[in-house]
Image (cartoon, rainbow, N blue to C red; front, side, top):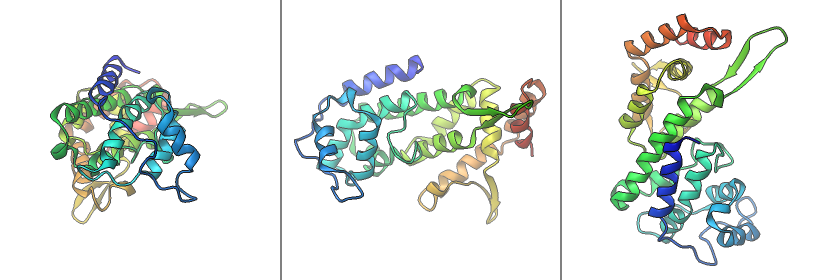
Length: 256
């Protein structure tokens, strides 16, 4: 966990501290959502001690967080723990990071929440972007007998970008954070993400199922960011300087 993201998480605990939950949560207790036992555990476990499994159950079961609703305030009680787990690399959702903060965006937080709460979200998403895209070691890799490392960046790259968009991020702002990160890590992520950029209907678009149909404009904006000539230059420079064959393969695929 970086210093920047840790400080933002602590700020979130302070900023959202006024929210509370009752003895019964606004969740669905049907057989495929949350059990009543888990709902009781969520409501009674100290916030900082709630495990990712329980938060993931809440992500799966909580009602929509419409502006001004009881559910929106309830969600904001849990939100610092969401950010805390994400900073530690634990996805508070059974599906990974991609849609774990979708209720932030659906709550129309930029219009409905106080400025200090919005600022915490924006600052966290900045720090989350920097943490996820500045360290290649955070991704998985394997080595075949006698062969080079083979990196699996696609899941973590897509997870991060889709999480940012579905959370309602300030997209130009987080892309600027990514753009300012040092190479080779930033360039490797750019090269990897370019592998999911396709030309369709007369435009480039970043392909991810969670971005269609609601976030097509954002998918086009990500593609525009990744197809800039300066990105290709960064990838080429990183490729020429690479000494890791596995990273060379990723960088080479990003040059087109």
